[in-house]
Amino acid sequence: MSSAISIAGLTKRFPGDVLALEDVDLEVHEGEIFGFLGPNGAGKSTTINVLLDFVRPTSGTVSVLGMNPQKEGVALRQRVGVLPDGFHVYDRLTGRQHVQFAVDSKRVEEDVDALLERVDILDAADRKAGGYSKGMKQRLVLAMALVGDPDILILDEPTTGLDPNGAREIRQIIREEAARGATVFFSSHILEQVEAVCDRVCILDEGRVVAIDTIENLRDSVDADARMTVELDAVPTPEVITAVEAVTGVTAVTASDSTLTVACDPGVKTRVLDAIEAQGVEVRDFATERTSLEDLFMTYTNHATDDELTAAETDRAAADAPTTDATTTDATGRTDASTQDATDSEDATETDAAEPSEVSR
Ligand SMILES: Nc1ncnc2c1ncn2[C@@H]1O[C@H](COP(=O)(O)OP(=O)(O)OP(=O)(O)O)[C@@H](O)[C@H]1O
Image (cartoon, rainbow, N blue to C red; front, top):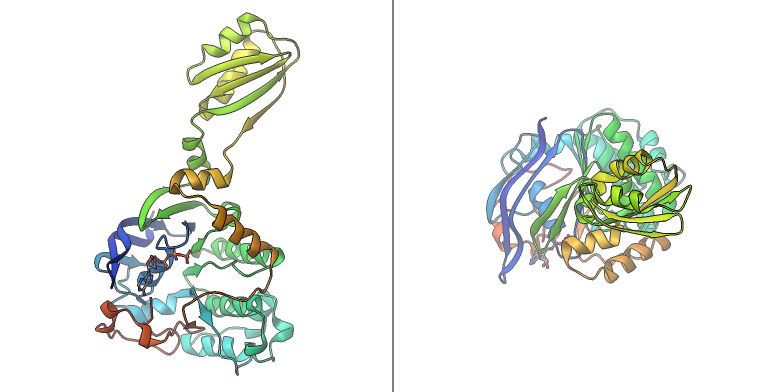
């Protein structure tokens, strides 16, 4: 399987001795929906900004679609769709003009109305984007990212600021894009969103990769002692309990009336059921307690997730809430060069109208 994104030994130190990323290694396969998770300040946006050559690494290498973003930025931007962190739109241009701008920049044929329809803002197409709500602006920038059927979509917190319907629509678009063969790399701190669409996730914490796997496998490895409750058709005999205890991977068995509670490795569930039935007892029902997504996240990041959860709940509840994003990336990826990281300023890379490579952060 070839890599859509390949990151090796990536370290980014910002002025003031801020170590944003430390020796990050990551491979995202072609066609994958890949979730990039981590608490605030973990380094997600910095990683994305390096992939887009908005920020230059202190050391390490990145490759996107086999290209070096620092050297082949123009060619790469032709094949990438981006929803950057802290985007803003041109207040005086309409939604339609924004998408048309992206179409012209990429020099592709595109049905602008169809794209606006796809992100559900067609009825506001001729209104100035300055009057759009936060969620509408986000949809608009997503429409611009979708221009030209990019081979890879890089989306920084694509569902933040959207109401539950909006978030669902974005997930649907992400799935559709993957179905036509695109790779989707998106960051989020909303675990449910990630679980709903991602093939694999990377959890970043304090600039370091702490896990890369499917959510299912991450859960399995955390659920070393999953609890399984099994409803039997009769009160279990000592022989049944002994048979279950004998299953490799079972650590404890307790019985209460016709219910058996089994602490076991999640991989041995079927063998537990087989062992019970081999004793001539019928299994009426069974259930396994799984680690909650919040607990999973905490296990890997060792952080209280109150802030994260509050933020997630707020995101879900408050559509179009005002953004607190501090960055000033505009809809084309351009940011205020006055805040540009010193490390980056010497690197005047090739640019095009759509997504100039200079950026803050
Ligand atoms: N331009 C910059 N100058 C100095 N420090 C920076 C800059 N950009 C990011 N950082 C620091 O790098 C670290 C990682 O930040 P980053 O924005 O990548 O995290 P994140 O995972 O995207 O967080 P969030 O979920 O809050 O958006 C933080 O400590 C942040 O303060």
